[in-house]
Length: 196
Length: 196
DNA sequence: AACTTACGGTACGGCGAGTACCGTAGTTGC
DNA sequence: GCAACTACGGTACTCGCCGTACCGTAAGTT
Image (cartoon, rainbow over all chains, first blue to last red; front, side, top):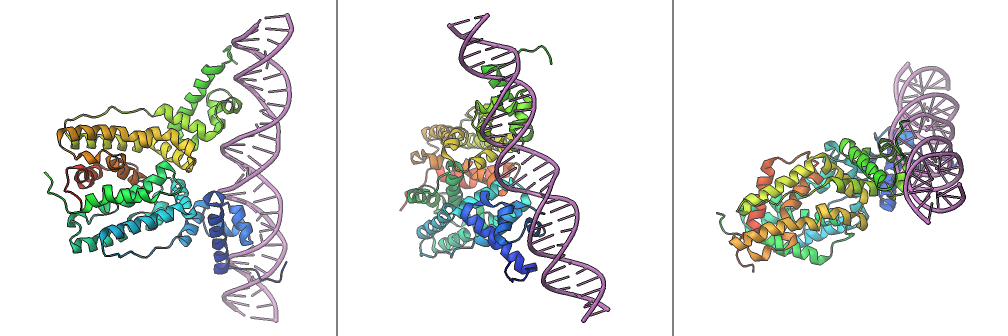
């Protein structure tokens, strides 16, 4: 209609991705249909399928576009850092984006290739901030050196995610975060007696 | 065709549920389509929709039919009990049934009513065996009394579930279970120093 | 026997994934 | 500046599956 020139290549790709992101934020992964994305981008499904093999791949691409890392807290004491990291995670999963992530993880259904792309946001790479914060605590003498281990370091955030996955809460109350920190995480990582 | 009499009521309901269970075990929740269940039960979708409002409800009903509680371990020491509970959970989630449960949790998408029915198997009620086992350990002096708290008691099984949800592993190696027990769970629940 | 209820058969409507075909505009090479 | 190629736009499919509607008919009821 308008005298706009026909888009190609990168320009069109960005338009499609922007449409996908808009649909994801407005309606979640369930609302991300190929027809709607195509319509919103002012193109058709053909152009999408030339770039992404299926709906899930487009969803993952859109999610990665949206998710960005939060700044690392440094309050000077372990408890403050840990609480802040937990609150960041809680905000993320409480947001519409958290629902998208859950749906993507479900749609991937244990398919390794897809999960690998999401792990940057939710898996092993997510252990890095925890190890950093714990490392500073060890240097201060607040934590035992043997807890610098991904499985131990990420216990708190794993427990929080469990609240979302199993209980389906829209947002975890702050009490729960505090409880996780004080009842589980700090007792676990603080200098402890030698095991039998 | 055959001179079989037409089924009604409970007999038909059981046939439908049996068909649903068969589809779930053979093809998982994805393979549980209303048409196939109807065909397999030798009836039609009508009879199904008179009993369950939608596909998810039928899936949940089929799952509950399949899931049964395992016997509570009692090895005489905390570590043995905990490892056995973890191995039970690992077997469950590694089985086709575990995939079904993941899909159902995903399909429920945080809908409380549905999640409540599954929690009997995976949520709060699942804390009971852990509290029992821990209670015996406390009586023996193996564990501190303040860990008799659902969030603390279930830490091990939550960590294990995380392996499945985030990493998508088909089955957790036994090393991982041992690591969870020795690196996280036992240090956490064993008698510990007074917190600051 | 008449009546009511529930099953069986079938045919829809709706939606969304993914595919196919083709005319046409933009780009590239000569 | 012209031809050849590539990629976009439009459209129309197929397929699978959920959920609903309609109706004849068998089973249980009184």
